[in-house]
Image 1: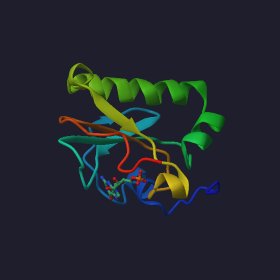
Image 2 (image 1 turned 90 degrees about the vertical axis):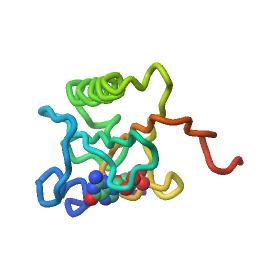
Image 3 (image 1 turned 30 degrees about the vertical axis):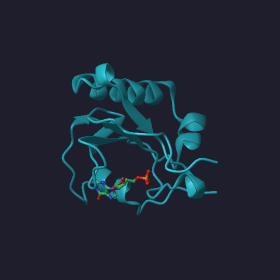
Length: 123
Ligand code: 5GP
């Protein structure tokens, strides 16, 4: 299980501004930017600024303030784009089976089209 935070992951570099992104939201605890390989007309990544590997790490260790700021940002970004009316999806991939590529907790906000079934394959 990934539990030790890797300071060389892509999102850590984005947070240090070593890799560019086009921020669509930023506050003391949160940064959000478009995914480099969008899978839907709207595809935004929301990340905490703290060093959290996964949703489990974030849920276990983040402060109430960080957790509140994170989910408020997700809600605001979706609402600003009118996604709640038509529907959309939030995804947090975790670890190997979850297909997590970047080991810094993030939520994908996907919308702007019908997204189809939740998973590509059934059990
Ligand atoms: P995961 O598979 O970890 O849930 O998702 C990682 C996401 O980060 C992928 O959708 C990938 O396209 C995106 N990504 C990887 N590198 C970069 C980057 O340098 N910039 C941006 N904006 N997105 C990235």
